[in-house]
Image 1 (tube, helix red, strand yellow):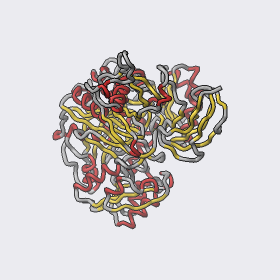
Image 2 (tube, helix red, strand yellow):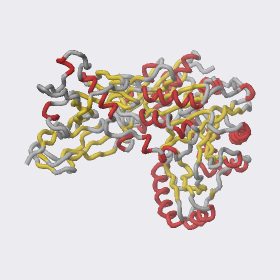
Image 3 (cartoon, helix red, strand yellow):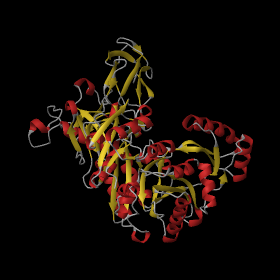
Length: 622
């Protein structure tokens, strides 16, 4: 058995592997960049080695630094996690050349499945059904156009070396093919250094179904059933579940058998995932499910498979890498209940899912579910890496029960001041079509109007904020008469400032919510996965019934002030750009809310600011 394990990854991934390794009595070694010096995975490991600057290309992706760290700490194995170097053939071979155990797929298997066109050719030879399309060396645009015409539109152009949704274009008509091909090739060359493409029939109403496979060095290969990863946004998975809804026994047997064939075709060892696309327009059928690609590593969504089978896939990885046989035979594996996983991201759905970075002054999760996370309260979401904060993983006897549990868990999640997609996840898991199992890769786009929270606070949020800043209504005339006037009925409207804007609210019964004081005494309320700052407004802000804006221009997300275009005293017009804020390498211009005069400039060029910080104030005036 491996005695000392270096984990060539970070965050949630490293923490997940450390948890199992520690339970098995294996010494763990973490690596970290400048940005991760105080990260959770560093604190949890038995030993940690600094490997360079914050950008991944200067630290986590540098083979020599990882290998040097392994040598200096006496590690006898390297686990690459998932992402980063997990499917890098050169790194896998370098690890083995150093006499270290590689806890991953054999380099030959990675190479065989690394290019989509070669992998599909191999699968055809192995008897695995593949999506109708064109795979070939003739990359002449005219030939590719002719093949697309033959296949029939819509088609999908895909980079042969692609992944993560990059180098991929849907084409609905022949007239659009040439332009889409140029764009796809340009992106493929920039992302992968390879502009070759293949053409596939685009499946309408598609389901993304994948099968977990596992092989050992003794010739054994098993499947660990399927997962459904159809809930996606821009080709990125959002909610995954196991088993797949609507999967009957015959179809499951066919897809899982095909997955085992695929793994055996490349002499697979370790954890891997065979990904399929299904035409579910008439329900799931064995003759309408086709091979897409193989991920030669553990997947982000592996916890749902663990939940329904009761096995630890990381433990299996470590045992197989140590030369042991698979812990269970195929007939010893069974499905128990239903599991779902939601990816909690640091992003703001109300402004186009723009990334959100900054400190985690508040980070609380429900305690009755599994949470896989690489950050903790008091930590920080930096702009250097994937913005996933945590995975919310639930398990229940039935699918409706799992969906309800996930919706509640996302609604109860509290994060501040970083913005998240928690409310979006809760709405998705609680949507009637999702609960009914009517899912495909277009689900989120179809229902975006009801899934994405509004940018303005709801009446329920305003009620909670109003109740929080005022004493309860009692028989005491000094607290019950709000806006008292002689011989007049009491005014039951309450002025409250939420997210910097002032509202007049009819005092009423507020829904249950969590209200807390966070850093610097600011008050935040959490309701249904959303988070809102609130305060008692200034008297000048509530002079009229319309509660006009005070002209405060605030940072919509944590970021850096790139430039400031105005100075105190400048006259500005509504919509005029005042400054530019940069977050996660994206720039956003902030504009004047109305015609007026710049009364105050608080922003400083080059400074980092938190979400909700007042940067400029515009006053109305002639």
